[in-house]
Length: 278
Image (cartoon, rainbow, N blue to C red; front, side, top):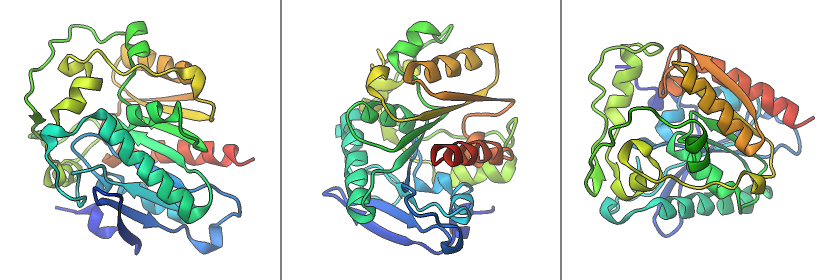
């Protein structure tokens, strides 16, 4: 199995905050660095960690972007915690700790790039915390978007105080080869049931309310599109926060980060970042 996390370029690592959150820091290539660029903060989704960004990071480093990858409490190499006591608000606090660390180190708030659960966390945070921009990659949707384009035929799954890691028993997906899935299978871990019960409609949640009018930074929404509802939902999410939209047909949720077409999302983010800095 190819372990992309072990192929990452040389970088710094540190533990921050009272929960010893594991933060990976990748400095952009000096020759490509432009003065005044804000750093990037990557926020992973449920069950995962900073390892999920392993294919993305080298591209942003090569383009001169300083990148920070946070691990929420209990995830990857962050200190183990009792997941039965961890909720959505705790994860929001973790991201604020990371932003404070970045501001202290770099002198400017970051552009936040959130995936899945990390996306709904980042949206909620952007209501009240200053950030330089917001990118959502197949983000969990807020209550308002679900009201506009609800999931059809949901049979909410029961869960306990923790949610077991996805088995990923399949060999391939629409945009992932065996190596991509095996890589995820190696690292996927349990998740907080309390957090899921707050944001996941698939687990019977009422959803997280996001006031789009309070998100003042420029934003980009990227969605994996398998059907018309996926596209409608992604467009609604972008409208709700006043952002740009890209729907990638034939891609999957995790494939956008570690699949064979991940570079399409990276290219669009790079283009958006370039225009953000004009």
